[in-house]
Length: 303
Image 1 (cartoon, one colour):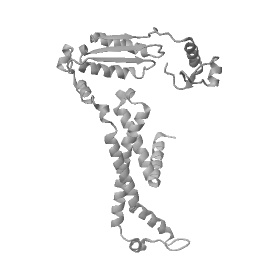
Image 2 (cartoon, helix red, strand yellow):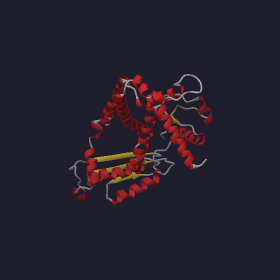
Image 3 (cartoon, one colour):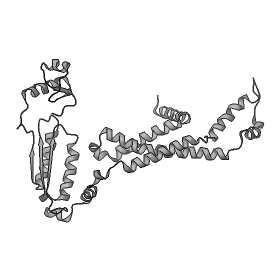
Image 4 (tube, one colour):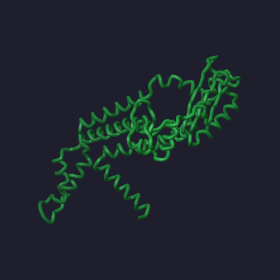
């Protein structure tokens, strides 16, 4: 099957879907277009937008767009329906075009064409559908305007100011926040997908606050991905900027208990996502597989 034939067939299927299910097709097309657009726009910061958050944002943009599109669709239908002539008069005007049928009544052949033409001309003044689509559009606009709470953006202006450029006082290490002292602490374990975005943004924040006003403390231990290497690169940037810090990479000061070490090796071998917690009973199958007894629950491991 040639690519051009596949494209034509896809367009034919899309046209058929739009004709038979305009509401559902419009919603699906808007959802896919919004999803692709958000991925392209947010591509440099995809680490900050996990899949559930991305789907939520896509729905926030799709809902008002779909409601507005369907409201316009129904408004055009109502307007055409009010301007359309009476169906009986339309039949009389087009009666001279009726061709004789081989079998049956005189208008058998033309009847289907008349009904199809009526369906294309008259989208139908369904006021209930119009009100429902308009309501969805308004609800979507309200959600879009209020999806970010005020307490979530209390530092938004400061961060944007830092992204536009380093303040003049920051060159001397004092930043733009006066003499406020801030302690930044973070702990990582198998977070290679988050660390690049976190280090980039935290350096911007430090540039605005001032290197003399912050102390950065980072601890990483028992990671099995690329987290240690990423944090070493971050440590090099911190040293270059002369930021006070204490970064511990692959720290083993606190050793794992023997039960945890045994279970952790079992977890890696069997793929069981189990986290140890006090006061809970372990799954018998997991205990049998690991060959030990302990307190566990089925969850994603955070060790």
